[in-house]
Image (cartoon, rainbow, N blue to C red; front, side):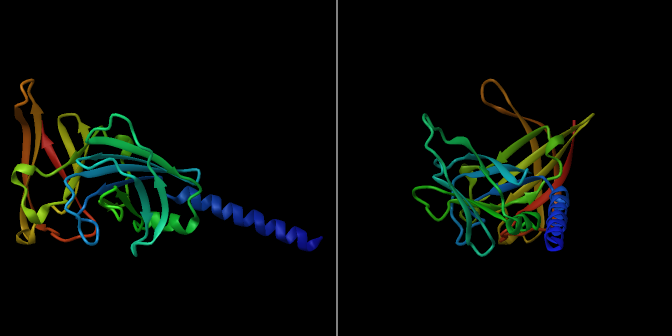
Length: 243
């Protein structure tokens, strides 16, 4: 009987610790997926951005993509490329080159929750032509999803695309403050080897007229002291646009 009570107390203590661990886990994450992220890199014409929410031991994800065919599968992998979880994506009728996929990784194992918290969980989309992955990215902590007013997926201009930045992309999180706009930018692969230091960057907010013409609302220029032309993660910068 004493052994039974001891086992019961140990079980209760273990459950309490697991519950406390759950409370400590950051719940919101983001991911930028580009061809440049993969090894070897893929010259993908599009990219994707996504948001993930961890709740009740389940990991919910929503991925918005543009410029690539509808994916066949999504994969979660570790940094060594081992597939930890794979979900098939059902075909969608009347598909266009720009859509989203949603899903849930149920009962995320504790060992993989640790990867999630350490920014070591990777996300990969595969297509029929690229079964090993067409775009991928690192799942990163995001502590401001609830305050984000708008978001945008950034793709290179195909008219001026240099070969060494094929497969690049970015994402913007936009926060509104009384008389200004705060923008958090994440990007991967937009710099070349010539941009290793003091790389100029212009951030513009544009308005599209009814005739399709683009008008600049506001813009700002910054210089990055150190850029990363080759990176398995992505750079994040924050800028302020006065309006």
